[in-house]
Image (cartoon, rainbow, N blue to C red; front, side, top):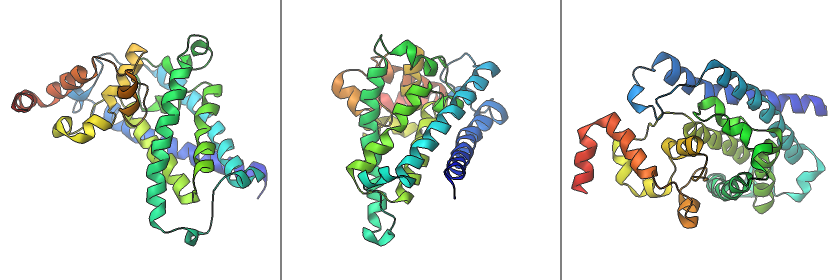
Length: 263
C-alpha cells in the first residue's frame, strides 16, 4: 500500500471516529433530546450553525495532522525510535490495559503544561485563539485547533511511544478513549451522576463543567482528564466547585442540597 493510500486510510478512519464520537452526542443533546437535557446545560446561551461549521472545518484539518503523525509513528523509520511492538505475545495481554491508563496519565501531564504554554500572551493569539473562539463549546469543538496547535497536540503520541512499549491496539484505544473524554469535556452539558460530587473520583477527575469554565473564562482549569495538576499548581478556577454544584442542583433539585448538608 502506498504512502498516499495509508495516509488516506488513516485520515478516513480518524474522520469517521470524529463524526461518530462527536456527532452522536451532538444529535442527542442539541437536537433530539435538547428539552430533556435542558437542566443539564451549563451555559444558557447557544452556539450557532456558523460556530459548528467553523469547528468541523478546523477539526478536519486537525484530523489530517493526526493522521500524518499516526503514519509517521506506525509506518516510517521513525518507528525505530519508539517502543511500538506488533507481536501481541511480546508483552502480557494485561499490559494493553495498563499501558492505556499510563498513556492517559502521561497525556494529561503533557497537555496541562502545553496548554498553559499556549495561553502565554505571545503565543495565544497565533495558535490557541482558534480553539477559544468556541466560548460555548460543543462536541464539534473537541478537535477545533489551529494547525500548529494540532501538531503539538498530536505530538503526544511520539512522547508516549518513546516512553513505553505500545501495541497498535493500545494506540487505537488511546485515541478513542481520549477523544471520548475530550468530547465529554466539550459537551456543554453536565451528565455526571448525582452522587459523583462526594466521591474520591470527583477530587481527581475533570467534568464537563470543569472544562466549560475554561472556555467561558479563558483562564484556569488547564487539565485534560484530571484535576491533579490544576490543584497542585493552584490554577483551578476558584468557582469550579460552586459552579458544578449549581448545575447539579438545577438537575436534581433539593436532593443535592440535602446531600451537601448531610456531608
